[in-house]
Length: 94
Image 1 (cartoon, one colour):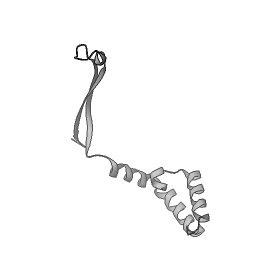
Image 2 (cartoon, helix red, strand yellow):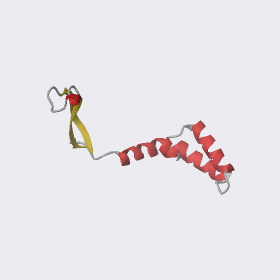
Image 3 (cartoon, helix red, strand yellow):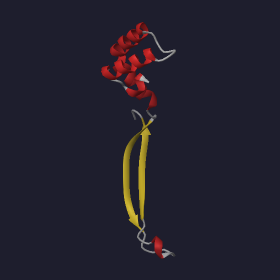
Image 4 (cartoon, helix red, strand yellow):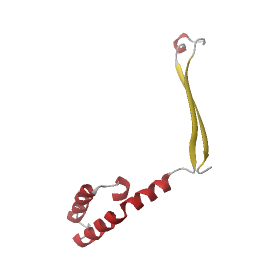
């Protein structure tokens, strides 16, 4: 929860306080250890989570346009906008 929310120190303190008051939660000593670990390793943990959740592919180019239909069998479909999106993906680092 701490890492996925990328909690700042105030949020961390409130979260850990709530966890110590919860039945079956953590002790205050455990909360202190978690807080110290998070303060020292927050940036590294956040970057690691981002790298793990990132796709192998990256977006290299994107083109889009909106078309309006001018002739159809049914009158109610005329002037209905249609979006066309073209995305070019490439491998990360290539």
